[in-house]
Each structure stands twice: as C-alpha cells, then as structure tokens.
Length: 493
Ligand code: NDP
Image 1 (cartoon, protein in one colour):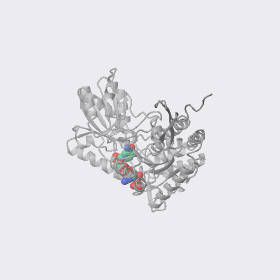
Image 2 (spheres, helix red, strand yellow):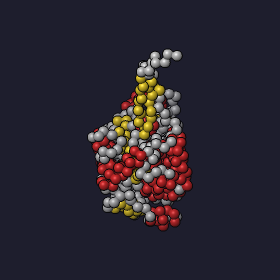
Image 3 (tube, helix red, strand yellow):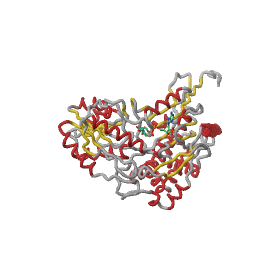
Image 4 (cartoon, helix red, strand yellow):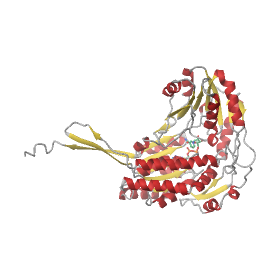
C-alpha cells in the first residue's frame, strides 16, 4: 500500500489534533516530518534560552511551595493512576501520533503506548512504598533515613521510543514528588505534547511537568542550567558526554543511557528456528533504531551458513511500509540524515569486502526507507562491527568456543544488552556472568517490563531506569541522627 500523504488516511480526531498542535517556546519554528513520506506533520516553535530559564524557575517554585512535592503519597498515586486511565482513553490517538511521528508500524506503536500505561501503573504503586530505614548506628544514637524527592529533574529524550522513554523518567520522578522538565527530540516530539495536556487533566499542578520543544540549542541550554537537581538523558554517547560535562560544573546528578552495539550470540545447541525469530526481532524492530538492537550476530561457526539462511528467509519476507499501512513490518528510518549515515556505513563495509546477504539499498520513492541489511565477512574490529549504526544493519561474525563468544561479545566500547541462544543448561547463566552488559537475555531478546532495571555499562552510560532502581534515581536520602544520651538519667521515678 503506497501512502504519499498520511493525512488522507487519518480519522478526524488525529487530523484535528495535528492541525492544532503547537510548540511550547517563543523562538523560531521547526518542522516535524512524517518519516514515511518526508512530508510535514506539524510546525512547532522552539524554546529559547529565556523560555528554558522561565521553565526551570517555575518548576523550582512549584517544588518549593510543595504543591506536588508535599502532597501525600496516596494522592500522587491516585493522580498517576488517573494519568494511566487518560492514556487508555486516548490510546488510539496516541498510537497514531507515535506511529506517524517515528515512522514505526502502528502495530509497534501499539506496544509502546501499552508500555506507557504499564510504567505509570507500576510507579503509582511505588508512591506509597518507597521508605527510609532505621540504622544500627552506635546505641547512643537513634538513626533513620528519610526519603524525599530530588527536586527539579530534567529529561532529554530520544525519537525512537518517545513516550515510553519519557515515561521511564517522568513516572518515577512524579511518583516521588519531583518537578519535571522534558525536552523531547525535535524529530519526534508530538506524543509528549499530548501527554503534558493529560497531566493537567489528571490533576498534576501547574509547572510540575513542563515540555519544552526545541531543535538545535534548547537541549544544551537546559543541560547547562544551574537550577536543575538531576538530568536524565537517552541518546548518543557524544551528546551524553556533553551533558555530563555541563552537569559536572555544578555538580548535578546525571543518568545516561547511550545505546550500544549489542551482541546476539547463537550456539549450535540452540533451537535455531526460535533463535532466528529472536535475532530478527532484535535487529529489525523499529528498523534497527533501538538502543538495545542486537546489531552484532555472533554465531557458532559450525552453524553459520544454516543460521544465516534461516535469518535471510525471515528478513526477505518482511514488508517495508508506511506506519499507517497495516501490512508494514518495518518502517522507514527517522530522517534523511540518519538514512544517509547508514547507507554510507553499508557502502564502506562493502568496499572493505563485506557481502550483503540481504538488502543494502535505500528504497526509491517517498520516505526514508532502507532495506534490512545483513553483512557477512567483516572483521570483529572493523569500524562497522564496532560503531552504533542505529539502523536496519546487522553484522554477522563467528566464534568457536564459549570463551571466544564472551570475548567477542565484549569486544566493543559499549555494554548495554546481549542475547544468548543456547540449548545447554547453565551456559546462558555462565555467559551472563562474563558479558559486560546491563541486560542479558537468555533464549529471549528485547524483553522490557516496568519491573526490570535497565541501563548500560562502559560507553552505554550509567545509572539504571525502571524497576526499583528508579527509586534511588528519583529520591534523595536524608540521614537523621539523634543523640539519645542527652536526657539519660533525668527520670528517677
Ligand atoms: P542526540 O544524542 O544528539 O540527541 C539529540 C537531543 O539531545 C536533542 O533533544 C538535542 O536538543 C539534545 N542535545 C544536543 N546537544 C546537546 C547538549 N550539548 N546538551 C544537552 N542536550 C543536547 O541524538 P540524535 O537524534 O542526533 O541521534 C544521533 C545518534 O544518537 C543516533 O544515530 C544513535 O546512534 C543515537 N541515539 C541513541 C538512542 C538511544 O536509545 N540510546 C536514541 C536516539 C539516538 P536540541 O535539539 O535542542 O539540540
């Protein structure tokens, strides 16, 4: 199904929504494109440095006067649950906006918005359950920890999973009483703009949640602002480094989730059909534009040819298409620039002797489509085997022993995720101990859940989101120590 203008395929609600969406800044406008057609979806105003200053001051005032930070935890729980209900009410609209804005098939965006609801409900539960502790300090003292909000938190969030990744940060921040400022990616900011309206409707007080739209300088102005208590970033290692530098000046807490070059490791003992399904899912989901994309296939040498054939069958059968095309299984890349970068990477690999078992070309016609591309014949230390491409490009490598699989699994600067496919008891757990990776999936790939801590090691960043880890990330501990000996012996009854 060829779609050249997505608007013609929208219902009235989505069309009206797009016609009436505005940016939140006072600066010049920027265009938000449909990656499936390259056409303009919306024009939004960008936030200037003065808009950033105003947002941080307002968030600080809201935090200090306690309109949210000092509300009872069960009140915050109710509001978060109401937010989850409002996302459910607007579910179809949000799925459409997210699909259009990112280019991913609607069926994928469906899971994303379900995940948003799950994360909101999970952290609603935490509002009343994050507690301090009593400490066995010397008996002379009574020592406890109190757990409170951090203060004004900022998030700079990416375009690949706009609303879920925003929610990993925003839901726990709200649960524990923080104020929050979000700067969504200029490439896919629309769902955040709808969500902030829902916050107001759910009863989040003014200035507790702010979204700043911007392109080009808003993120840097926000990260450099001295009024922040925490910054959470998901995106490239380069920008992560710049944010960490800016934050170090004050200093401000930072958490960074910076992508990866994750290995999917297949042993000959594995159920190869299931492994091929899992490897395909791990790299072709969201056109490979996933921080945990299993972009390096490490396959035991004895099954290399057979496994590559299994994967190629699945890959060749996949349908590329516009996000609103019900047949589509792989969407476009997010932008012309990201596609050009991936095309250049593929060309350099082919120049160096790689073979494209599948794909290798950009599609002619509207949209930023690139065929899913499997490359064999590259050395482990070739730049294309080492650098994050963030597109539908898979590099295939081999190993002979478990030890070599661990060594090659760890042989990049990154450490975000890994998959291990094996039929041997204990092998997956042994591999997990050896892999330097924030998450290891065994006979599975890409499993996310609100309960599961997520984050990276090495160049993939630091800090964990989701699960109980977010309690530490969005609360501050105060240690309170009282000397009990002061009045000892006063009472002589
Ligand atoms: P970036 O990592 O460059 O992030 C862009 C965002 O960061 C924008 O919101 C931008 O705001 C902000 N920003 C840019 N410079 C600064 C700064 N100095 N301080 C604070 N904020 C800043 O992502 P891109 O979209 O350019 O993607 C580039 C690569 O990043 C991809 O190819 C991929 O490798 C990786 N990536 C990883 C993701 C992941 O999930 N880990 C997700 C998305 C991308 P403003 O527009 O105002 O400048």
